[in-house]
Every structure is written in structure tokens, then in C-alpha cells.
Length: 402
Image (tube, rainbow, N blue to C red; front, side):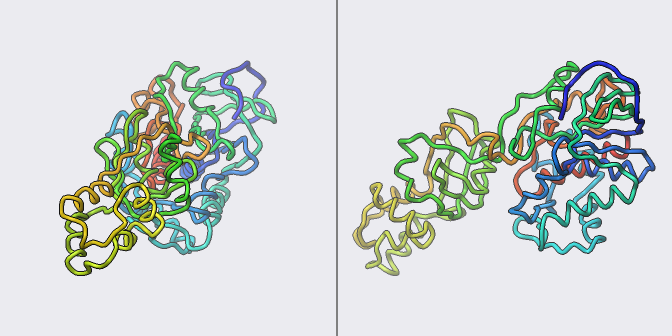
């Protein structure tokens, strides 16, 4: 995004508000401030704005979640996000989507996706900004020269002054999309507290002794309940060539700590021992392999058999052994040796400490007219549209005030 602090210079341009970062939060902040008649510049160092919007949801953009609430977020202060989320709800964003005639659908668990393309959401935000006179510039890195107000910045065209400055530079996730640590570096340079960062919503990697036996399962997905600490997520699990992924694992990764195990239930929501007893009574000649394949998939069932489960008919398996088989499937523990890191992480955990900011306006308490919004702040959502809703809500909160 540019340098953090530098020297001065003769002012060539004046804005009411400059937003560093043209992602979801930055564009939302810009259009809301534009609605107030503010002279706004949205500046991004990348060649286009909204890159993460375009790639999200497999190109369909999971733009919000109808059930989004404070419980869907991680932060050192679990109350901080309540104000912004209550004042700009999923239904407010949905209303804008519908006003633009963008077709969408609910995929699962309240997750809303575009029917056509993520481009619809980005074009909507950019069009709103431009209709309101918001200036958007790409390939336009800015450095913060001096805080005010007025704040003094420097860009490719020279010195810029503004009354309000919003930092919407995102986190460290997916650097190939242009992610940088600019916002975090700025906060540290200003002496603001920054919570330790790490990759969140990210696949976990397994040590070779655990990964090697599962190598043939790469690409297989099945329903599971994955537990990290006290959090349990019941969604799909995906075997990869490096370990485990899929929504359930991604969710759990944000709560997992190095050195801890992930507890995995491959028959979520039921009593597998009881199910196996029922199957034994109804179909005694059926093999355990085929019985497990009904919910584990054939490939996973074959691997579990190879790893030590009896390859025999149900009628030859006693109750005690059935209980042990059920435990192998419902109390499977893996010990990750890490994650795939920021390269594939959907979000960055940690960030600018919320104690430094107003929960109502996102303004920095120590520096009037300076705001931090979106992923750069220590507020991280669950998978499924919640992080976008935080971008819209925090951008709206700052846009109303800045």
C-alpha cells in the first residue's frame, strides 16, 4: 500500500475523506460517505479493486449470511462488533442487492450467493460509488506522511490532504491477491495495540505419519463434526494431499491451537454403535465395509478397514467390537502439525486491538479522524458470509462518521 510514515510535501489534492484499500469494507465506506456529500477518494495499490470479492464463493460471492450475529465472530472483545452489526444488518445489504436486480440464492445455513457471478456485487459497489462522485484509483499506493487532521498523504500524483482517513487494507491472507501488512504496520508505528495475527479459515496439515495413510483419499469429501476446543462445526470435511480441509475444518482452524488435537465425528448427529446394531439385525450378511460406505463413502470405508477394522459380515461382530468400531469413526483424533498459512487462508485472525477504536464509529481513540475497518481489525467471522457482513457493517459505521 505504500510507506507508513514519511516526509511532507506541497498539497496537490484535497479530500474530505481518503480510504486506503478498495476491498469490500473500503468500497462500502466510500459509498456511505458519498451519500453524505463527502468528497471521497478510495485508493488501492493493486491493479483493480475488490479482488477478494471476485474470488469469493468460488466466483459467486457469498456476500452475507441471513443469520449473522455477534456469536459468529472471534475477537478479544466479543462485544465490540455488536454496535456496527446492529446498525447495518444483512437485510440492509440484501436490499441494495435487490435494488440492483442481482439474482441470488441461499446455499445452506443462511449463506447467500450470487446466481451469476461475484462481478455483480463488485459492479454494484463501484457503480454506487461513482454515481455519488466517489473517486476510485487503482495502482495508487499511498503513504501516510503526517496525521492531523488534516492528514497528509503522498501518492503517485503528489501530496494529498484530508480531514478523515480510513484504513481498509485488509489482513495478510492470500498475498497473491495483493494482501499486505500496511494497516498493521501503520497501527504499530502509531503505537496502537495490535493483536497477534495468524491464518484463519485455513486447511490444516498433518504430519507424515498421519498424512501418508490418508494419501489415497485426497479429494474425498463427507459430512463430519469437527471439534476444536469447545467449538463444534458440522459441515463437510475434505481430505487433501497435505491434510484436511472443507468447511468444517476451516471453521475449526480458527479455534485450533498448535499442539492440540482436532476431534472428528464421521457420523455426526447420531449413535453409530446403535445404527450398526440395527443394521446387524436387519442385514446380518452385509459386510462392515459396505455398511460404513453408506456414510463414509466407499474409499474412506476401505481405508478404515485397511487400517484395522474387521473386513467381515455384521453377524460375526459382537456388541463390544461394534462399540469399538463406532468409537474409531466418531472419536477420531488427528494432531495437525500446522496449517497451510496465509497463502490459502480466507481470513487473518487478530489485528488492530478493538480497545483502540470506537465500536460505534471505528475511529481511533488516540488519533481523531483516523479509522480502521474490516479485516485489519481484530474481528474475524466464521465461514459463510459473516466476514463480508463485517466489512459492510464496519464500512458503514465509518462511512456515517468519517
